[in-house]
Amino acid sequence: MQIFVDDRSIEAQPGDRLVDLTQRLGLDSDSLKTRPLAADIAGEVFTLTYIPFRKSDMEESPSTPRMRRAIRKGEGRVKLIRYDEPRGRAVYERTLLFVFFMAMRSLYPNATARVNHAIGAGLDIEIQSTEPFGEEDVERLREECRRIVKADYPLERQRLDIAEAIDFFEQDGQSDKVRLLLWRAFTYFDVYRHGDYVDYFYGEMCPSTGYASVFDLQYRDGGLFLLRPLQKDPDQAARYVYAPHLAATFEESEHWGGLMHCTTVADLNAMVESGRVRELIRVNEALHERRFAEIATRILHRGAKAVLIAGPSSSGKTTSANRLATQLRVLGKTPILLSLDDYYIDRRYVKPDENGEIDYEHLNMIDVPQFNRDLEALLLGETVEIPTFDFSTGSRVYNGKFVSLKDDAILVIEGLHALNPALLTPAIDRKRVFKLYVSALTTINLDNHNRIPSTDVRLLRRMVRDYLTRGSSIERTLGMWESVQRGEQRWIFPYQESADAILNTALVYELCVLKKHIYPLLQEMPPESPCYDEVVRIIKFLHYIRDAAVEEELPPTSILREFVGGNTFYRKEKESEA
Image 1 (cartoon, rainbow, N blue to C red):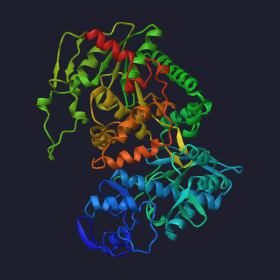
Image 2 (image 1 turned 180 degrees about the vertical axis):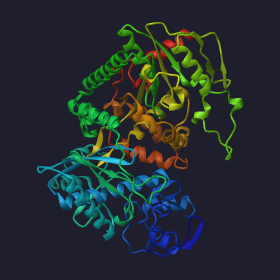
Image 3 (image 1 turned 120 degrees about the vertical axis):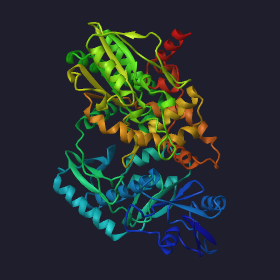
């Protein structure tokens, strides 16, 4: 059978795995920069242990029929996936976590480890044990992980009956997985195994433990950080970067989740089933409102005259600005809302880069000098005419919007680049400016070993909003998401720790509401779509979440209203323009 691997032809013999073919072609490598981690066949991701051409007497794996369809559809073409793309990094992370939890089981069989969240290249892992966990334990774990990697144990994928899987994990003491599997809609469950150790990570993995060769561990009180490879130089493990503001925000949000008795998807599903999700919504929204009030009080105590609000895509910047403005009004102030978008330069002056593309998220898209002049003048008490960007014509216009800061006035400015140091000139007193970073920092997990990335929740938000309010297809949103993430890595995340406050806009209940909107749309995506593999990944994750028809419980000023519709702030704006 003829197969084309990265456009190189090879004859696959019965029983050959994809990893065997890559090795025969000389495409395997000891360097993570170039080493294949998985394979793309007709837009779907497959592990390299899959066999495209089987002997007649070989037992079929659970994914054999799916792979046959993909091979036929792709006309025998296989694209290797490496660490330089998001899918490759996800495959690597799952494999690395398998190695880590296998090491935990070997050294500390009675301890419990939970992946909480990611900060930069580090995965925050909490350790619960009857014995104190210290730096010497981290060193032991590091050495055990290295031993497992060096041993290069094969990772065997096995399909279990769902009842058999539940019984196994119950006897194994993994009650978190048992609770999740009780909500699984299918009669089977695939696990990964080496010897007596069995675990599961929701997606494809590398062929063996030897692939997870680049990592490090960093002790923290109560646990550790599992450090992944550098994205730009994957042969080097990332260094631990101290991010106290972000860590404190995650810790506060995880505490909130505990107070609301909702830290996993199983907890959320149980609340949906019982109807208690309505109370969860009310409590969660009240906690959010209290946080906005606290930040407004800090702004007043600071004596700030301008608030700069930044955050990644679909973090709820606009609603956050409006809700903060409401709290400032409660405290007797007059907030003036501005958007950095209105300082976009005219599209006619924008030139493509050397690749013929335009990076609309680049700082140079903003007329920074004009913004500097206007902000300096406003803080000096002068009256300034503020521009408005007309997106229909791609040009900035002045239509008589004059602004001045009276004694009780405070500027509230939101935008992608709001925390960039270039926006504040030396002439601006930093004490008069309060910087706020907002992001949806998800803390609810599938189970102890499988976190839900914040990026996935923001993507769900954006797909729903773009479809419902902007008439944009799911395919279009998914197609541009990788570019959006690159912009965030360059223009937003480097400045998050410079903020005076970080506001977590994630809501522990939001997945059950977002699923109701997005799940039917994802199921309509045809297999020939270039985004089909990503759609399948999201659908598999959403299978575990029970949707809830509870939108009447959502306050009209909720962050989530920015994405599912019914936001009072936007309604008022539209009515005033009519």
